[in-house]
Length: 457
Image 1 (cartoon, one colour):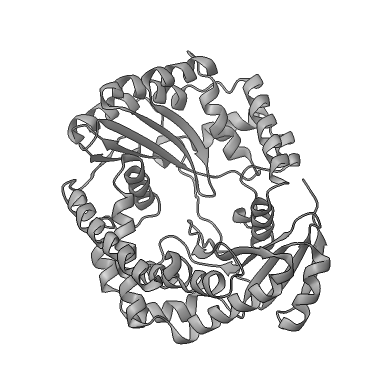
Image 2 (cartoon, helix red, strand yellow):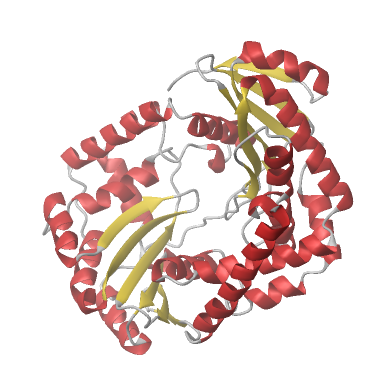
């Protein structure tokens, strides 16, 4: 039965791959234009549906946790000509969406509207970008929401363990700082700091604007040049990040939270940056280990064969600097030790034996299928184009994706499995009921164990 399910799955995926690659082939190359003020434009025509999507990225440079995210949030809460309610009503009237945000590497401002409403949507987009007033009351409101989110996160095991994993692994590196901030950092952020952050980092010579939609690229380039020409150039800044230092040896940390029945488990180490030259061998290897549904080894062994969990996967979170490699799952408190031992055994076998020819063929079909399927919306396409531009990936990344996947040899994939997936050097973090878990870890020879009491923020 399992074999039949796999065959049907990959047959559907293969058919979808044929249709999706054909759809992409009709799009053509994106247009790239550099404006006099330094703003980089990337424009991609997409005429399948009458929608236009615009995404602006500026590098994230906050030294205080939560400052970038708070600045991005409050940008949409008032301009010189509109208050927060008017901004909300305007985008609702257009039936579109306007959003902002921040991650470890950049802040973003995003607009999606019907193609007939491009001019009206861009007028609002530009107003929020160039004329934010950062009203004090809105800043207080956003700060209160961020603090409430921190309180809610105290009840979410995945958030708790994820935040602690980052802080333990990255220490003082910027990737170790909580993006939403801490209670202390949020309380100390002033309106003056928000304004200073905006004026320093939201400048065109550090920005990328990607547009995908039902428009003519040359006409859109001229329109955006006229609209954004008044955006004054700022100072050129250095956004390079220090290389994080990977953990050597194993470190095991058990966070005691007696009120939960499930042990949440994260294990991993520093991985690789987004522009790693070994991206494709790494992606294929990881698909076989933990990112190919029931065809992945971890899900097949830990869930299907041993029945220890409902969900388990592995992955590399790649950024401008090396992001983390993670294996994450949850199981009953009383089976935490058994689950960890089983995961480590699969990781050992994976590193030593690598991928079989059959696994490599399957994961290539899988990766090509889901990639092109995912690009069949303007929002997904605009995100991928922005990713390519921001992380300085090959310009032909999308057009040559299938060829790059096909070109990976078994030797390359197995070298990635052996060299880039940590085994001896691991941070193993468990969140659960310590009195039920500690004894299970004693005989596993995992390394030094420390127990800490969960402290809500």
